[in-house]
Amino acid sequence: MNIPFSIFTPMHNEIKADMQACFERVYDKSWFIDGEECRQFEKEFAEYCEAEYCVGCGNGLEGLYLLLRAFDISDGDEVIVPSNTFIATALAVSYTGATPVFVEPELKTYNINPCEIEKAITKRTKAIIAVHLYGQCADMDPILEIAKKYDLKVIEDAAQSHGATYKGKKAGSLGDAAAFSFYPGKNLGCLGDGGCITTNDRTLAERAKAIGNYGSDQKYHHIYKGINSRLDELQAGFLRIKLRELDRWTKERQRISQRYLNEIKNPKIILPSVDEKNTHVWHIFPILAEKRKNLKSYLQENGIGTVIHYPIAIHLQEAYQDLGYEQGDFPKAEKIAKEELSLPLYYGMKEEEIDYIIKTINQF
Image (cartoon, rainbow, N blue to C red):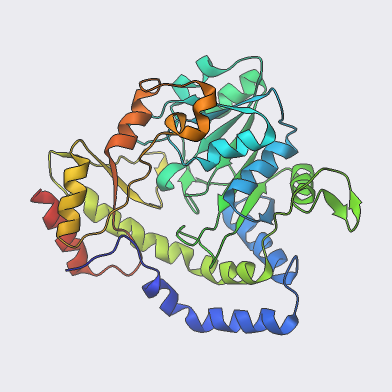
């Protein structure tokens, strides 16, 4: 049996006619940037996230950057980020001239540990980026309490958590603002790069939109030194179609993940945990294994594709050598980087494929 880590074919086959009709609609209108498709998607996604405003942008990284800029975060400032996340979270901070300050995760959820945040706060700290990693929300209440105590902004990095909830509230409506990615592999992905920000703050939304449109609030009137970061019409139209199916597709990811949780029984493997306050949307299904290299090779030999998220912790990346961190500074992030392995998980998996994966892992 040959099972890839992920494929889009079953999902895309179901909506192919609608996607092709969308392409023709946008093509015939000859309006490709900042048009009706984008306006409608922003309205629909804001409603989906239970937020007042949504602004499309080029990708998730730029969404974070736009929010940091809109909050006036710049040279000399510090922003707290998890030590276990994709590098884009830290890069967005670096692009503003500020410094990312890393905080260790909880090993059960892989998300930032609120108990570790306060000791990392200094007079230069301006914000906390709470990443909802792998499809599960960070523990937001204590994060928000700390932010209130120190007058900090809270930005959700919701790139992997479309539709996830914390205490019944949707990701994208939990902090001061949030950034989403619509990279093709995301639970809600376009057919290229795309992203957005969500917020309940109108002024912030307008400011982020202007910064992403060359700093312009109206044509040829530039109030900020902005960038070009906009969600194009075609991708917005595709996302509108996919958004209608997202909850149905998510339920299937949740069903498959529950089978993994219930039926994988191997003492060499640590399964992920779901915080009882959360609804997990399972962007990926991450396990920990001390013998990851052996497990990955074994699964590959048996026709099962896997991916490592992420093999080098950010503080040990060459790009961040200037911060002076060393091996052992963030042991939990380093442990996850050394042991994490993501199992196949996608809409359209066959029952016999799920059976085979579980059986094969249990025999490792």
